[in-house]
Image 1 (spheres, rainbow, N blue to C red):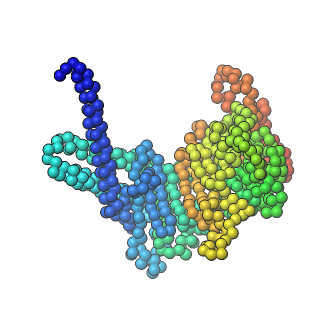
Image 2 (cartoon, helix red, strand yellow):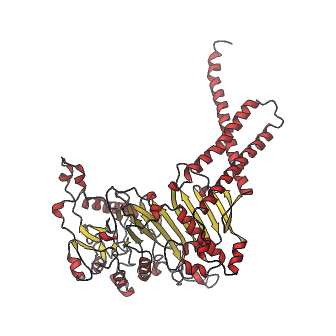
Image 3 (tube, rainbow, N blue to C red):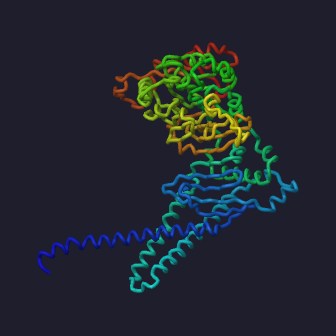
Length: 586
């Protein structure tokens, strides 16, 4: 070999070596994917069976990538989904339920009631643990059989290939195909990682955790045996997996509504308040359609708000004014004793303390039919005004505004709440509330077609569900849970829930500072927010820098305790700070 050839040989040898290593890695990955697919196919072709006294379930690994970290239980009356949040995306699990024939036979003889159907303590968990163990064994067996079949076919007629290298590749691929999904499942499907319980359709309509519109016992007695069984199982799953702190008695419960748009559905609000023991209602705006106060008068909305019996916290939306300086709706709502305006006039901000939960917010200073080339800049300016107006004030537990864009740059100690988009959403600690009335009949009424129209849903806008949320705070002022509802058929007078989701509060907001207490006995108070001057914020504090987070004591007045039973509401409106029992009419 000549000297001229040596550099060529040295420069081409390493790429060949790396190419060989790359082929080996790709081979292992392909074999791992094939093995995983084989294990999944095995559980789907031959699912395992697990049983309780009343049910049997065929359990398999879900092939859908959209059901990662979800235990999915489809039924003909709705789906039950358990959502988990783990460090790795775990394969979804699907369990198809069947009611045992002997139980159905007992129903026909009238010998079983709903209480008798509820699984015993630990029965569901034992059945699930047993099913998951058997499912894991079948999955591993499917991986091994698939790998053996694929490698056997690959090596057929290739006796010259190195067996040791092939065995190593197959072994590594098999370990990956088994270990990665198993590790993901083990670290994900734990009670500590529980994120949400979700029930759809009829199961969501008559869920057992509250008295929403119907009593579950009375409803189930009129239903079929299958529905009774499924409701009992749905409640058992919720009780089994929803953490105790999420299901504990809360310190405060807030009904979140938005985008009423001129519809007087406040009798429905009042029923929710009573059934769900709501502490206060928070409305993120767009109460009207065209910015005219007369809309609410004609619909009887203002008197209905006054009859709710709980505080009604409000910020203005872009449909609630005729121009940028129009405060007519704010002045009208100011006359209602139980209404709390978080920005009663431009640039004046109020903190509401409801059962120990601090609530702040600001209005949307857009108006009906406004034309603007840059709404984003306008919302950013509103956020900046609010930040300046609350400078140095403690962060609220709930920060409210109508539009999501205005909330994004702002900090909060708990959650942010907005409406405007007519679609429920959850983005980190920002809760987007859907439209409580489907957007209102004026904007969203759908004229029925003469042919092919379902009479039961005539007048409803497809894809525009009604929605509201219930936000619960624990007695330590932490976010305990967020329960989300979507429903339809309200126009036809037969409300039916499409979806009920219970979200673990620790997935929504971080824990508050220690030592706080929330509860109905703390009542309700309001006080104007006084910003701390810039020079005071920059001043060195010798004793405790944390005092900078407290409002300036000299500028605040002690909240005046008010008994609504003996005090004229007009006096309450004039007081600089008011207090009343939470849950009572102010």
